[in-house]
Length: 209
View 1 (cartoon, rainbow, N blue to C red):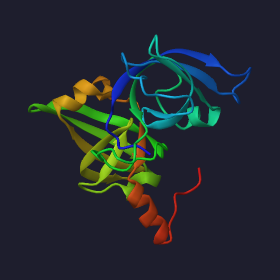
View 2: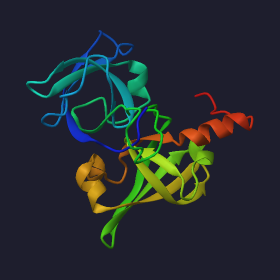
View 3: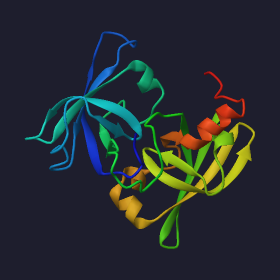
């Protein structure tokens, strides 16, 4: 379980295939910030761009750790197949502050950046979400984008999905990878956990892919 409050920006520095064909996943080596792994252990959960992964090896001397990601997870996430910067969050402790919202680390769908422009001192981020996620997005509701807990400012339904708008303050841009987004960039989305259960209790469910 996570909160969507990013605790560090790391970088995937190496990817290695775990097999000879596309049915196999990859092993990723991540460079973490200095001292980030001081309290980490083998088997710990760390979210990469909002996707919960298990630490399979770590080297505190070099601030590096590895994770194994399946072909299924690679197909259903964005930004984890190649080298590059990633948002990091360690799993929530029972006595931690819940600064964002309850996040499971399970990516529900891939969104696409439609607009990313400055507005005053902040930036407006507009993302087009898949149709199957549209009913879970609401004005002033919570959404996780690449692991970052954010508040939805506006939702516009489209023929094949919906476009939602988010306001990003400078602090968020400075301490996450969201500042590098561009129009057309694919991002990981996780819907609000409470909305997921409400939908189920009301008799609905996410359609199968």
